[in-house]
Length: 121
Image (cartoon, rainbow, N blue to C red):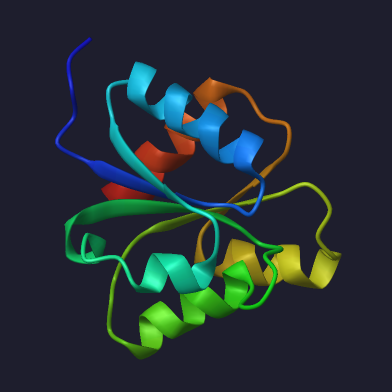
């Protein structure tokens, strides 16, 4: 499959979710990296190379919403696709104001479409 020049980051505390999304993104032709927490993501030297961030809303420690705010505070403009399996409606509404929001479980086509929409903006 043709490889896209886009590097996609996935931040989720669930290892099974990270592994399945990594596989899905790579099969879809993307380069991808995964992180178990917001803090781990913020330490990555690859941040300047990232085209999109697939981010769980509910993370231990710094939440996905707080990570997106921290990126804006640092003037790091990475399009975000939020995902959630059980976030409060107020968090979902906040996520939708700054990016797409997918509800777990979702299918690969939904993720690919959300990523392409996010990076096209």
